[in-house]
Image (tube, rainbow, N blue to C red; front, side, top):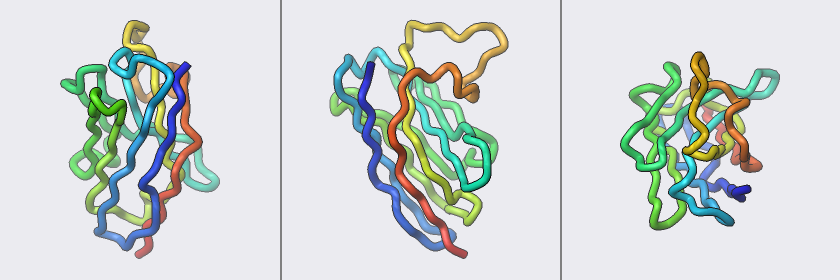
Length: 130
């Protein structure tokens, strides 16, 4: 099991930027695919972005495509989420997630399915004001 700790959340005005960081410990970081989910008050948890073990493949929700960038530094056991052009609707608790890269996705399953992610961080709050 991997321990995940997020940081970097905060309050920002619309149009601003934030970078979230997720530190992982307890495992070989390179063995894990990483991702981010978010949950706004009164809404279901939703997929934001994911990255494969090498960092060569990234995936994004349509709502953040072109504004957010996910990356990872395997030497520092860290995953990042760079968020630009933030909107009030981006306000949510952002959680870092991880899953073993050797667990291949079953047919019909995508990174957007929260059930495939085995490890979750506590989350960091992002608030965007208009």
